[in-house]
Every structure is written in structure tokens, then in C-alpha cells.
Amino acid sequence: MTYLYDDPAAFAEDALAGFCDLHAGAVRRVPGGAVRADRPARPKVAVLPGGGSGHYPAFYGVIGPGFADGAVSGNLFTSPSTQDACSVAAAADSGAGVVFSYGNYAGDVLNFGLAAETLRARGIRAEHVVVTDDIASAPPQQAEQRRGIAGDFVVFKILGAAAEEGLDLDEVVRAGRKANAATRTIGTAFSGCTFPGSDTPLFTVPDGQMGLGLGIHGEPGLRDLPLPSAAVLAEDFVGRILAEKPGGAGDRVAVVLNGLGSVKHEELFVLWTRIAALLRESGHTPVLPEVGELVTSLDMAGVSLTVTWLDEELERWWRAPAATPAFRRGETRHEPAAAPVAEVVAEPAAPRYAAASPESRKLAEAVLDGLRAVRKALHGAETELGAIDAVAGDGDHGRGMVRGIDAALAGAESAWHDGAGAGDCLAAAGDEWAARAGGTSGVLWGAGLRAAGEAIGAESGVVDVRVVVDAFADRVVRLGGAEPGDKTMVDALEPFRTALVVGKPWAEAAAVAEAAARDTAALTPKKGRARPLAERSVGTPDAGAVSLALIVRTLAEGIR
Ligand code: ADP
Ligand code: MG
Image 1: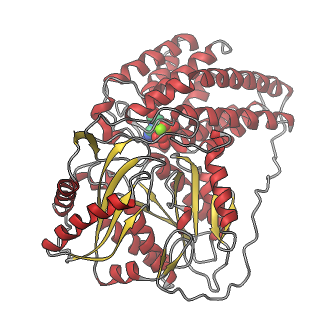
Image 2: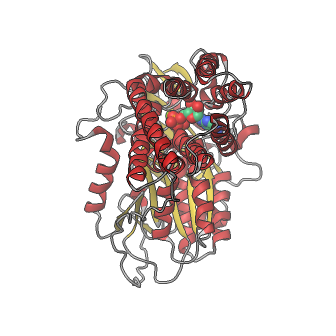
Image 3: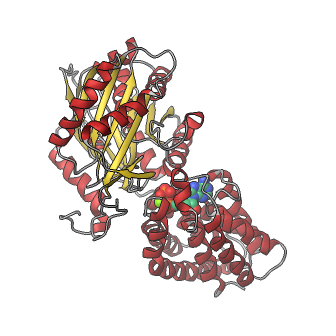
């Protein structure tokens, strides 16, 4: 339960604003997150962890010397947008490049990946280190598919220390990837978390049980097991982690015993006694272990154990000093800053649209009407889409689509007022959708609508919807990399496109999309947040496929 909030939809922004006010001497708020208040005295690699909000002190709590240079912070449990990541990176870069680091989730991978491309095109070197520590989320043979959970903390700490040593971008990235390769986490949930403004948790754990293999975004555990004693849980955790000891690893380990939000420190200490004993019995030496709340999931009750096998350099970086609002270690040297960072206010870039023909202006009105109809439909379906996504994903799909379409319509209307034609209105809608919604669906819908808008152009008042849908679908498929059968929106999109190509009218193609979306219930997810919970997902359709079908059905009215 979240007791205190104003506008639930603004909870993440409101929390970040409070944090930045409280720590005004250390951090500065920038669009999309926060950065250190001081510029480095000499150019250094900027380490930028990021992801959705709701995980404090991850990610902005660890901004400071020896740790992060800034943090990219999305909406609750929703990946930040590409624009968020670019904005924070531009504010944090001091000339030596930036490294984004984030857990392995489709939305984060897409948005940070696009941001790195955008930054490189602007002359800022940008790399990324993806965290994949959750051993419950995929077998060792598919380790690269694993999710990132509390291992984030160790990887970010090591990246921060390596950058503080003055290493160059490639070396900092190498340090981070090495830390990730040496890190394993297992966690368990005792009860689900509840979004501000909601009175039901995203999932529940049956009485007397625990959900082994927790997610940190309100995903339920992968398997419900009887709730054991602390000693038995410690044995289970340590046994699972040691079974995955990397080949050739030594016996010195960084350890994080993490509380997810509402497990008491005393309980963690009880568990720690057992874990420490078992690690020592197995010949391991815990080095500066951390027990506390380091990567949380709102008010979720749960714990996770992270072990990172250290060699000499990893141990040096793990031990290195750090001074951040939420984490402090040793004494950091304070180098006088060249100049403090000013509060950055988003500068609205002056929109420039191609001269539009009167026909295209007329068509733009139809585009706006379509967006308005879709907005109404998505608002009506918000709860249902969230509930579908909560079965095996993280429950944010309804919220994300609503945030996206609201921004998209506002963007298109503003473009229209600035004289834009149909294509530019739709492209502006896409840009705003991607910038404001975040998440996997946000980046895909945003990029898809921009591509559709580019296909329409500014001249004609007549468009071939097949060309526009093709442009949308090509962009979504190329960017997301999903194939038919992976259980994503592509499973509704491809049959829809095919139906149009073979000459079916829009309304019939929409019916095909709806049937295809329903049929995704039988599929097992291979992409996105639902993948680790594949079995749980069977019997429920894919949220993104359902919303896509709803949108094309809604548009059938206006499209002839
Ligand atoms: P997130 O997964 O970041 O929480 P949403 O819940 O808004 O984002 O969207 C989830 C939907 O995104 C899924 O139901 C699926 O349809 C779609 N999706 C996930 N990964 C991909 C992908 N690689 N390609 C296309 N669609 C995807
Ligand atoms: Mg989701």
C-alpha cells in the first residue's frame, strides 16, 4: 500500500523532485532524471544507471563521487524513453563519453540502445552494460536472456569506481561487463507491491507460501513454494548461487542481501547470519557485504541474495570509496569542480514542418480525429490492458498506452496548430508517444507512428493505407526484433498487414487482428517482460497484441 501521494500518475516525478530538493548540494534534476551537481575537474566517463522508478535507492540514490554520474529515471517500473536517456547523458557527459547500465528488459534495451545511437550521431561516445544477474529467469545456457535485479547495485558500483579511477570508456565498459559476468542473484517474494492510487497489489502470494524467482517490477515469483524458516531459505539461496559459481572463480565475494521494500532490517540480519555462515563454510570470504534496501520494488515484501566473485581488480573497485545520498563507503577525495551544473530546463525545440498542401492539412484533421478516437478507446481499456499485462508481465501496459496516446494527441494537435500536414502530425504524435510513455510499447508505437507519418508525407490528401501500415510494421519489427509466434503485438500486426495486402478492407483486416490477438493466448512468450513467466502466460492473450487490435478496430470507423 502506498499511503501518501498526490496525483498517482505523477508519483515518480514528484518523488524525484523531492529527492533533488533534499540533496540539492549533491544532485541536479534534468529532464529524464538527475546528474551530479558538480562537473568533474577533468573529463571522465559518465556512468549512468537507469530504468523505471520505484526501486530507490536505485537508481538516483547512488549519484555521487565513486558511483553514478547521473541516473535516467522512467515512470514507475517503466523504462525511461530514448529522449530521457539522451537528455541525462548530454547533461552528464564531460567529454569522455557515457556508459548506460540497466537491467535486461526489452523496453530498457530498446530505449537505451536508441539513445546510444542518437548520442553517437551527435558526437558523444555512448556504450552500455546490461545486467543479467537473475539466475531464476533463464537457465545458465541462456544466461544472456536473464533479467537484471539487485545485481544492478554491484555492477553500477564497480562501473562507478572504474570510471572514477580515470579509465577510458572501453575500459570502464570492460569492468562493468566483467562484474556482470561474475554476478548471480536469487530472490523470493512474500507479497506483491501496490501502485500509488491502487488498492490491490500487482500480485499476491498464497498464505504460507513464497514466490521464488522474484521480479522487481511487480512480476510474480516464478514458482510458489512453502514459506521456509530463515535457515532453510539461506540454504536454498546459497545452494542455488554456489551451483552457478563461474568457472575459475576464486573465493572472495562481494555480497548483497537486499530487502525489496517492506522486509525489516532485523529479518535481513537473521537471514544474513545463516547466509554468512554458509558462505564461509563453503570456503568463501564475503568482502564488505551489504545488507539492506538497495534495489527495491515499491512496498513489495521480498529478499534477494547477490554474490559477485571478485578478482583483484573487481575487489579494488568494489572496495573503492563512494559518497552518495544513499550509499557511502570510505573517504572520497573531493576535487574542486570546474563549474557547478546549472539546473537544466527542457528547451522546447522550435518545430519546423514541411510546407503542407491544403489536401494534406485536411487529411491531418482526419489523423487528429483518429487519434482522438483511439485515445477514448485506450482510456476505456486501461484497466483491462493492465490486468492482462499483470498476469505474466508487470501490469503497466494500460497505463503506458494511455500515457502514450495522451502525449501523442497533444503532439499532433500542436503540430497541426503549427501548420503541419498529415504526415508531420502523425510523426509528431509518434515522437511524443515515445518521449512520454517509455516502456517497450512506448518506443515501438512511437517509432512506428513516426515511420507511418514519414510514409504519408506532406503533399497529398490521399494515402494508401497499405503503404502506411507497411511502414509502421516494418519499423516495429526491425526495432523490436520479434517474430510471429513470440507472443507480442507483432502476432496481431502481421496478420493485419497481410489481410490489407491481399485486398481486404480495413474493417475486415481489423477483425483478423482481433482474432489473432485472441489466439495469442495459446502462445508462450519469447520476448519482453513476460518471457520468464512463460508458463503463467499461457491462456492469457498478449497485452500488446490486444491493444493493437483495439486500435485498428477503433480506426475502422474513420478509414475507408
Ligand atoms: P513493458 O514490457 O516494457 O512493460 P508494455 O507493458 O507497455 O511494456 O508493453 C508490453 C507489450 O510490448 C507486450 O505485450 C508485447 O506485445 C510488446 N512487446 C514486448 N517486446 C516486444 C518486441 N520485441 N517486439 C514487439 N513487441 C514487443
Ligand atoms: Mg508491461
